[in-house]
Image (cartoon, rainbow, N blue to C red):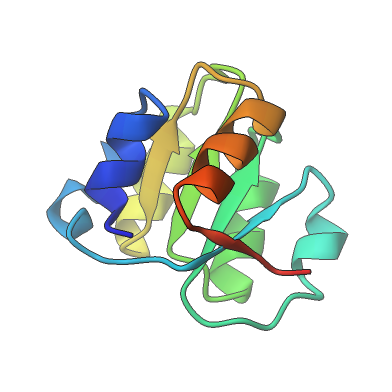
Length: 114
C-alpha cells in the first residue's frame, strides 16, 4: 500500500518526507517499547508508536525504518522532524489510537510482523 493512501485512511498529517509518499509498505509493527522495535529485522517496515521523543527517531534510524506514524495526536518536536529529514524518514501524526490505526491498516491489507 502506498504511504499516501495510509495517510488518507488514518487522517494523518505528514511532517517529514512528503516527497516519498508514493513509496509502498506491506508490513507494520506497533510498539512503544523501542527495545522491542530493535529486535525486528524486516525491510521496509512501518512503525506505529505513541513514544514521541528522540529515542523513537534514533531507534528507527538504527533499524532502517523510514516511516513512523505517531498515534494519539502526539506532538512531534522540531528537533525530531529535523533529524527525520536528515535521515530521509517519513513522519506522520494521526489523531487515532494505536489500536484504531492498527485495525485500519490491517483491514487495508498491511500485514503484521507476528
